[in-house]
Length: 416
Image (cartoon, rainbow, N blue to C red; front, side, top):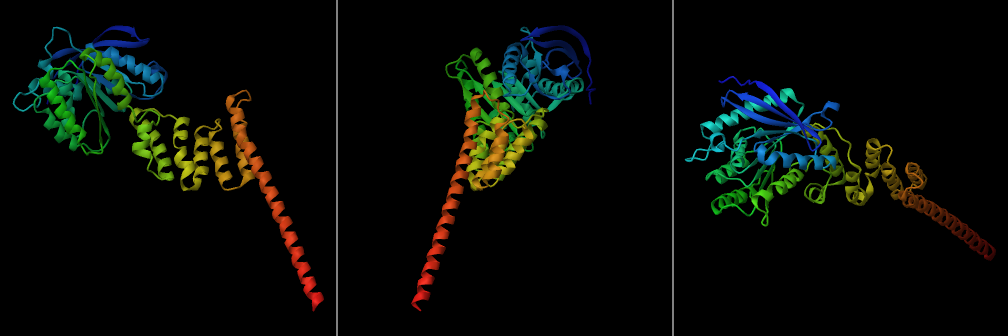
């Protein structure tokens, strides 16, 4: 067994890209007996926090790294993906990628050199990154052309190294469609996210292999395998790169992002109220587990589940939902609104108006929401008034009926 340790020889330069720090380092691999140049991108707040960050390995650094970092920064700024540690493996223009990323022409499995590259990444590179940086559980690999074929080999392991796979304009080995059909069916444990895309300027032979692979992956019934395919019909292979890198991140990190229509329809719409509430809590527990970031349940996700919690099962779980919202966002009126709804539907108007008033007190007087929220209080006041009037009317009718009965009884007595 080769010694899996390797030496970071020298830090070449630190430079600013997109306002973030990117460091280039040289490393020596005992598997490859060669020096590899890496780019390491750290999130802006990396040194200010103690949290872990998901890792993304970009194999074609010279082609993909800058575009990937730009997309990652944009999505993270808008809180739709987590911040990432991004590491790129650089290949110089005069190097032959088939040397490190080729395959056996007879069976489409890795040849000796590409097997050494796999071992370099799995046993040297990733352990060293984990030792030097705070890495979360979720890891993604990004590759293009020949290296996109190579990156599929990680899925051949019983326990794949990566959770997310982004492949653009892949140059697939002839046997890869069947290999993927086999190995994807065997995935179990944590969910895997697989993204495949190509542009219009791809030759027919490569396109046929991509289409065959796409059919096999679309037909996978493995619940742990999540797949998205995109054909950018109007874009050249070069233009496809930034489009695919943006689209793929939106997909790969979909479990992190707020609940959209697709997630709601696929995972939540058919659930009972309690199951939907459990899913919401599980989503955020899973975010911390996978991405190393503990975040509150977003207000927009509470609102997204309203049709289930309010309308189903006669709103019986609104009180629990409101208490969860209050615990998560104590300064928001949303939890008080759900509690007010619960007591309103139960016709416990004093408790309902109390909850609404507590929520109303949290809204600034000059906010447009203030008048809208006050309508709930007015509605309960009107309902209380109506209830009082109905009670008074019922009492009046009861008295009249009682007096009528007494009068009838008196008349019957006189007759006797």
